[in-house]
Image (cartoon, rainbow, N blue to C red; front, side, top):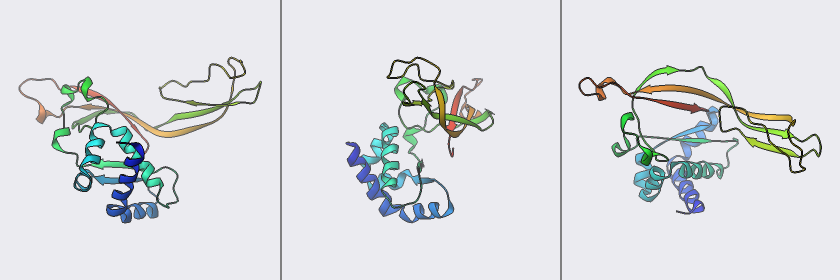
Length: 195
């Protein structure tokens, strides 16, 4: 499904089913909208299938569809609940084929870090030519640009950085999911923004 088509269909879905809730969230100063998956499935089965198979693209399309509404907010997040039972999986059964899919994993939180700010993007200025270089911060280590377009290497001035709240969790299989003397498996989870 084309990106523009996805955005259009999400816009129609949100306008018909969640417009009042969206305005209420804006009024309360919240920047996220919780959508029931079963509503999307009833409205547009193709769009719901696309969400399960390619969640990053579909969620981005839904967030762009929200931006088309005349609401005074910078970035609005969309969250989905009540995914079908076919998407539920045990931590021990996660395989490479599940990467990039929308899954439901249940468990017990065994460890959690404190909520800390994390840099998502940083802007640097080249002292030689004044060029502004934007560096996305995808890893846990802070990255500076290696070189500028003018040929200069190293020693760039940090101008600004964007921060989000972040937290790490260790999720463990719940005892009800285990058979006999099985040891529970664990998975690390990284949460950002309102999560």
